[in-house]
Image (cartoon, rainbow, N blue to C red; front, top):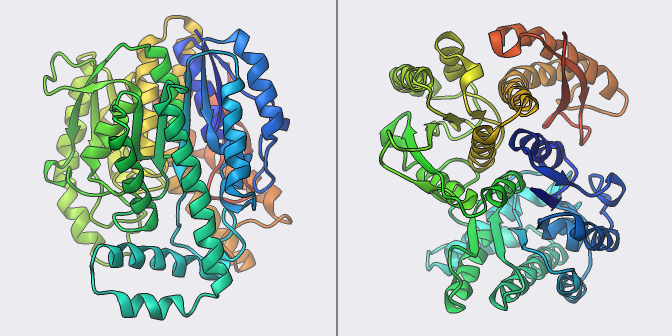
Length: 498
């Protein structure tokens, strides 16, 4: 099978991950040439991408298209460019000119991050980001009838009118594009549409927009087999790739939660309980949940969200009590994972206790008790949706591995996940940021110290490899990169030493 994918942006999570999963499943994956893709805040080339799609369509069986990249030039471009709604919608109409081929399009409901940081947002986010996030929540609460008028008015008065206008105008443009995509789906111009929610929350304008889109989907009688809506972003390309590979087959997944009473917890950056996130990701992949563990094709072992509600930090208030509460559950959880692996079951471990990295207590148990080489997948890298989607995709791909090269690809990606999600995200990233703060007064790289930081990361990750036991035997970290010139995400190559 061959698939053309226009990814969400140029980061490895959206390009390298799908490629590595395709190698496991034995799929020929075509990606656009790098010169057509975005480079951080520099948009990609929509005209060039349309031309590439037209050319490659004769060589593939399916197309999977990120609307952000094809219509705006990339994920960041969809947030910062000044094109009007009519210009982007006109570009969307060019989808109708592509050669006939099964086509899936995915697009986001634009996020409203709770941070004064403009790396991925309009420049005014550096000063007003947190206030705009709070404003968004208050607007939703006001529309829901809550008595927040005074708080909303006071907050709005602290934000310049031109920024409030631009904030609303951009959201209207992107919402209009999502409505246009709904229209194309309703007219049977698309086979599948995925509208996911990036960095969402229970209250916020993005959540409102999702509700409005859901209303129109219901009025248009769009089924859940053709329209998927759920929290997610960077994992969507991997999930849709495996959905295409499954070609209508419906694998079954038995889901086990480490702490059963916490399966209703809402993970950070999401708007639904964790069990809903798991179920939606399974559905997006094309699978179905089963209560029959013995007959299930896969066991999904979920390390449920901690009540801390943020990244792992042992210095936080109440951390000790939460750690003590979770410990006995994790001990039992690890033993169950071990027993299933030893019984030859396909086990997918989704470690979503904390965002942006592994739960070190779970890792300690897995390293001590479980043969990691026999896991179908592991993930812990970002939001719960990101983690679960990629882990599910890898797990299904692993079940399809049919050649020595495919099995090698599976071991490479499995090791990649542990090195990145535990070794880097939990351990090395914090060490590097602490060192940078001591040396420079800031917790991230500058152009002047990026090369030295990369060298430090490279050495630290290689030093950690032996701790992963047989999974890491015969491998080394060959090269390290910081794709967006910051320490939040990392990219690296794994090479055999013999």
